[in-house]
Length: 412
Image 1 (cartoon, rainbow, N blue to C red):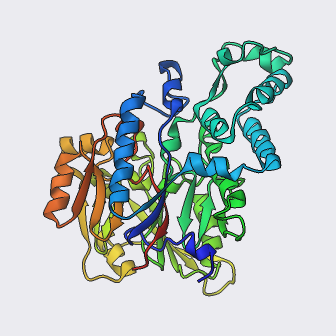
Image 2: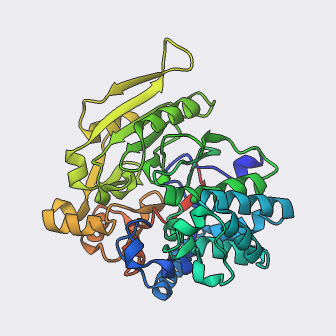
């Protein structure tokens, strides 16, 4: 096994979780204000102290089950240890943060010079308020015309959902193009980590999709079912054209994957990504939200048998459980519906990610405590649940899977 394969290895959703990337919520949550919640993709404002405590408990559950926990903020700071790399990172970050006004750019770079690498990463994640820099001088039309907005750099409250900016698949990654500009800067952290961090920089990490692509692909829509099958959601955040491009890359890469299943799900806030309505629990068990199940079309994508480099795409006509049986080569698939399919309970628990579970081993998952109806049903089906508190974390509309990016899983 090559060294890079010892650092990235994900060929399933359920293989024993060995290494995971998290982001502990920081001051970015305290820069959320009602007037800009929609812009920053939030519905509410989590209380930071409690959110951090809940997140620490999440990490403790993982560590207690033998998982190595890495933090995005720490890897990012270590990745910019070289002075030139740090300078390039700041330039890229300011450019993508739309800090292009001449006066603002000069002053904020001077302001950031005094920060250590760890402080710099925390500050860029938290956002920079205009009132932090009293000597800010408006020198350009852009500076002057945007004078009422309170931030020089937007906060990044979605960062604790480490699932989305990149996705580990096989021994490589997709470095994603986010649907919204406000989240696209998040992918810079992964870019610099995989190019510059000592853990990865000496090895060429395969990139199955590039963040500069024009079409959006987000990690919450990517589920690695097996060494042969990947599912990707056509969702409110992932474009069908991006899935085609990714499919061409991964299917012709020499990796073991043979089929991409494209799940066309409703394009609505409550069904943001595929993993908010559908996750894998065991070899033959899945959670699913009943409304998504009723409004779902699945397409299979494979290498063309006639034309090298092209794809063969077919609409699957079987019911979902039979499609999964066919491609996962199991005798029976059990779809466990959120809250048992009850109209009221399912809608409530779906809003708080009742179908979003993080498998740490086959048949063993981390779940939110507040989804007690769904959790009880999972246990009745023989699933072992690790229940975590979530009163504040759940306000971000993402569950345990959303908050984690596996880097290493054991092979099944």
